[in-house]
Image 1 (spheres, rainbow, N blue to C red):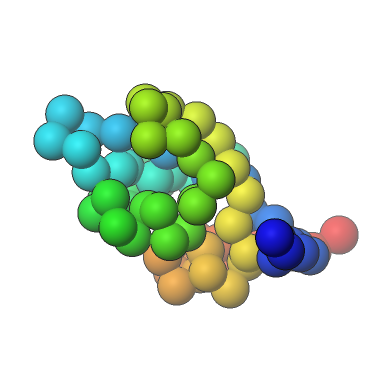
Image 2 (image 1 turned 90 degrees about the horizontal axis):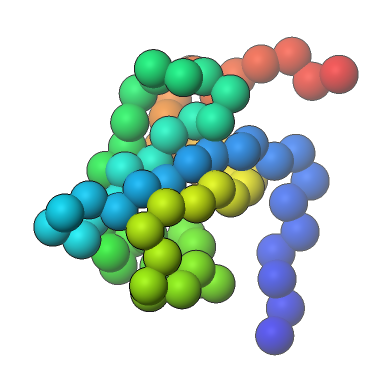
Length: 78
């Protein structure tokens, strides 16, 4: 199986809610916008995460992160 190569990643944290949905946060911007994803949406973005997982972190492609979080993702690239 091939995995997508993430060239310019954005680190995120995720936490499963009591009802089984997922709250996704930008890891480097505490207190910023939270994105709430259904289990199906979460699985399509993070297919390798175990169904037993309660919380964790991962990386998103910058384009996908901008679609989810908007302009909060835009930053200078060193």
